[in-house]
Length: 306
Image (tube, rainbow, N blue to C red; front, side, top):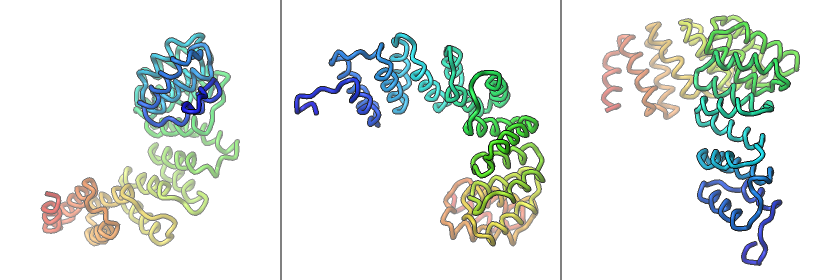
């Protein structure tokens, strides 16, 4: 385009920015924008596209600098920065940007709630959710997924029940992410019966995440026999292949039950899956053999680890 004598304009620059995948390219386009004399700070579309590009390429420092010189403040750019800070695990910076926004859309609320939920500040996430319900913004599926995660961490089953009613009222019972979140919430809040009813009612075929959530729920609350029974059921039904997370749920169950034969069977399964080099799985197997009296097997695995 440049070699043919044509220069990018206010319509082509945003498209070029969306195609950027690396910080150096973003900076080069920014420099060309400045040389071209096109208005950046007072052109909302170009400004927000450039901020979003810096955020997408994980260059939050330049994104923040550019946002700070924008006039008037651009809500689209502000939302992009909020999402960027949330994704980078910086809830305090996320909150600073969020509080400075005169008008907050659902994306901004979701990013802020998600930032709190992901860094373990569950109470803050739930308090912010209550604030959102009092605002003009409407919760979305993403909001509810983050809230369920916070409920699970905080043991807040009452709010989790409110989310369940929201899901049912809007006909989102087929949404796998939300339903897995509900199963996880009930399991971590100690209501394994409610979790199992939901799990059994999930649309088939159930994915490995759904199975892992339920198996992990049993193991976490020391209902080891049920964890192993569900793992066997997973094998029989064949809806999903177990993964490392599944195995890290059932190997400790064998250890706590002293179920050496089952543990050996799972060890063989680990080798068939070719995940025996996974440090966590190997350590879990060593612990299982030690607790079940398979000392020689534990020693052999320990030698292989070294």
